Length: 429
Image (cartoon, rainbow, N blue to C red; front, side):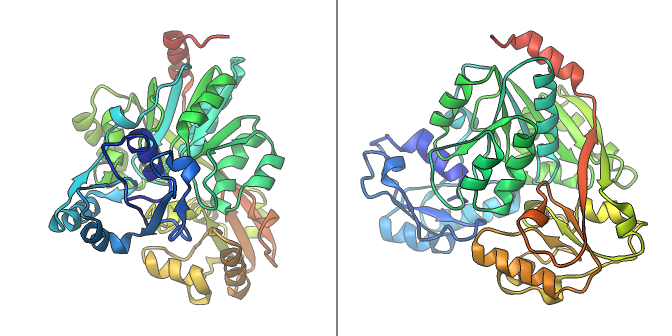
């Protein structure tokens, strides 16, 4: 059971060349447009010359019955503990075992030191911390590569390497990919992503002295880390122990960072620190204050704005709004609500995630969805579009009114932790 990432990795790491098992299917959820495709034979290995079918998760119980399935391997992330056990109940009721594979079976070794950046939920700010760690390592003269959690939305390429904007322009197919890759590449960091993480590690460690694992959703790393940094969101203080496998990350962390500490309600940080003291008292703890910057405040002042927020944070991350909304408080005259004007898959997104407020999550998993995204923007009445995504959507999406960008950073002191890591692990030349 998966969503185009952890499922493929678990298969590659444990089942691909294992004759003791026959994998009959992948089920898919969360990721649009992945159903009914084939995990290709060249990735599935010699035991699966026809590849493996990917089917909708809604067919899970029928699959168990049809194939006499013995085990169902739950292999995706950012799900509530309650949700996981509902899925377990479906499998158990059908007679199958419900299995969660752990880090010892799925984390791959690396020949160079690894720092992982993960979180307890989507939208905590991992990408910002990954960039800060990369910058500090580069400032010390080290060659750094980032290995990113998979985003197998459009093809199942074993290894993708991004070192330039030309690489991004020619290879990516979704807005989310660009959001994750572009800021790192523009800062001079090579990013690796794909489907076969054994091969990805081989290529990354050949060109770097330190590797950073940039986690997606709230999954734990595919690469065995030497230092685990985990983020908790002060705007969601109760989420640290309620989601899978975010609580696993909390329990494993060497360094915990409480992000958005200046945006939270009074007492939120203390609430999180109490959880940390109970769950992982040996971890070091930092607080990270948000730094929000609007590219042109005068354009926004006293205007009605349409805020376009980071898609995953707002959808399955569970946030009603994000950095763009926070940055415009006290400046804009009001927020335009795109929900009544949404069309196609964008309207379906709002229906699927009713918690979303008067913001537009950036969506673009196909050409058709990009057109629906553009039409939703065009139909919505507003004066200025506030783009609060890591990539400048104005370059890739048609917006027919003035735009400003919101940039997002953290004020947090990572220096001494990076120094201690380098002393302990002494990256080679």
